[in-house]
Length: 126
Image (tube, rainbow, N blue to C red; front, side, top):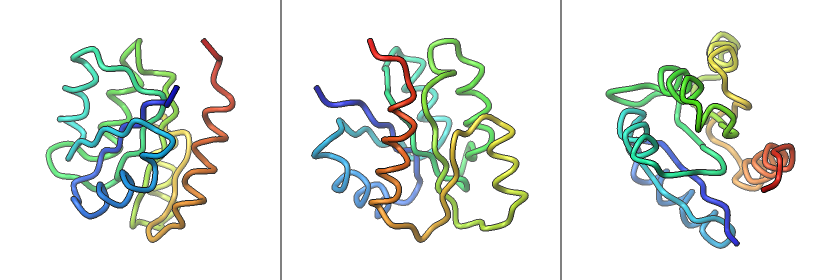
């Protein structure tokens, strides 16, 4: 059975690239910003992992992470941030808010996939 992957990114091209790359192994859902993603999650949808952009309109990555970590059903979902920001301060901010990993754009999709696998491997099995 495929795992559910939520991709939160305001760039349609990035949504398309990640959907195409991961759709063979995951059921992929995309949302254009953190607020829409939270609304979708709070409607009762379950995910196994989340990949979220750092810079988005309406609700950025750090605010989204903070809200996900406050929700009892989603607080333990592996969450990786993709960002064009290489600064250590941005990485630290996301990790402090509860991100499990941080990857700088441009990135190799294979590296992203492996990082997701590592995070998922550490999750308890149903």
